[in-house]
Length: 99
Image (cartoon, rainbow, N blue to C red; front, top):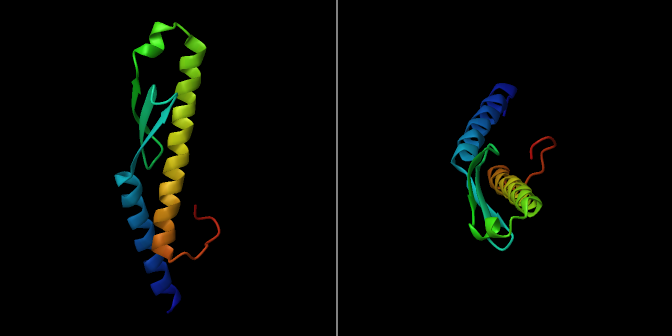
């Protein structure tokens, strides 16, 4: 395989990865489901759901902590999903700098 073919293949792989990122949606929760978030593969927060019971206690700090925990879990899940997709695309080959 010459360098030009290799570059074309890398570009195709990058385009496919971008499509996968756009299509990837993860859901994550914290507090036993009291806070739920959805994120896309670009790590953009799409939605936040908060159980009304969280407000009943009036504990602002707890709600803040639950939101942070759910978002961080969402980011971890996106990273994991993209790493799995990349592993499938590269046949498990570890390429430095790629997820």
